[in-house]
Image (cartoon, helix red, strand yellow):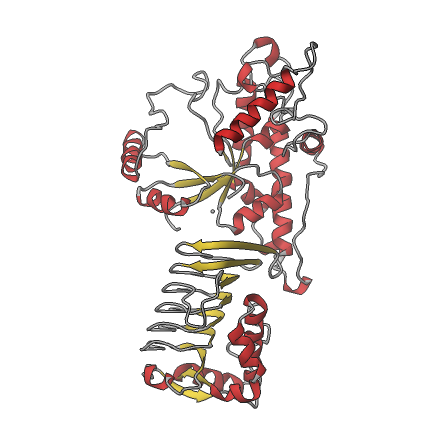
Length: 519
């Protein structure tokens, strides 16, 4: 039980401190959970990493850590260097953490502020505020921690805006399960910034910021891929100013004059604003270089197990593959923007198993999606470029679709293809039931074109579906492909067909169809 485990821990520690068979007071081993110790617990900020960061900040020599590298793409597929966001603009997205006068020394506090002013970023204060000698003191509302609901938060934001109408309100949330729902409430409460905090876990009206052990360009790029627009730093700028991670911040005994108010210790502070400027400038250079190289497909692969909530893979960009073994609710792959989404069942329940909810791939623009099971209603609604395979859909499938390719290996609901003006849907229909369920007001049903590459495109998408999901249905169809291919029916929008025909006549292609679609 939990109590037995707790007792065992206490007994072990007591024996280490007061051994039964010894009269000598032993030296209890420090496992290094708090302070870094040789052969102890691993720390993010190791002594070697601290030295490397401080060397880079003082000499502008890049020696920052980089355990993994992104895959690269050929030179001809990269954006032009001048099209990239400039380093001057990138550094404006950087912020230092909420460290107030009192938690750190005046010299450190001012060095951070001066550095961020030079870069055009933000140096956020904390609950202790600013030095009154640098600002004209005015009554302000301190941070409010008695928040029990979104309504409480909305009231606080309202009060803050009334106290200073020109202020931008920032709300910091912890990266935990359900943070997306809370963040949506914060947006409705009319905050200007949201910070998702925590390195283990990310809109038109707000700017999404994240922080938590960001140290390299790689960290920043990954955070950006997950949706962040601004990036907060706290520990790293302090290390650039001289912090050696003694972890004595709460004792007022910091040996380098950073986290202390002791006059003598503050004299030991040797940091300069230029050290922070150099660090963040080098970081921005690293970010820009990585963005230029671009992400190759599936550079980042996330494998999850269980039940996913709403909007799984929302806005997922090129280079990220998200796979769920289990199932997912509505809006899977909503606004998909080049990434790959895969959902496969944790427990096999046959071909009729519903694996994802309604409005899957709503407004998606590019990428790949593979679902080993059935989807709910309005599958691929307003899809404009994603290539997807699913094993059945509910009513109103491919509604208002304008582009992309959808392969459906099972039955569909009624009103399929309503308002569909572009893209092509391929439906496996061995029982010839699809025509009665299809809305033909804007398109017509045709057989596969076995003369061109259309057969190869459909077959390749099914092969990818099998590769990602191990689909028994896909395997059975390909095993009898010479016969099964004749059971596929495609829904082709009238206007889309005319555009393709006109472009073929001009020896061009309106929407190139490659075997490796979406890669």
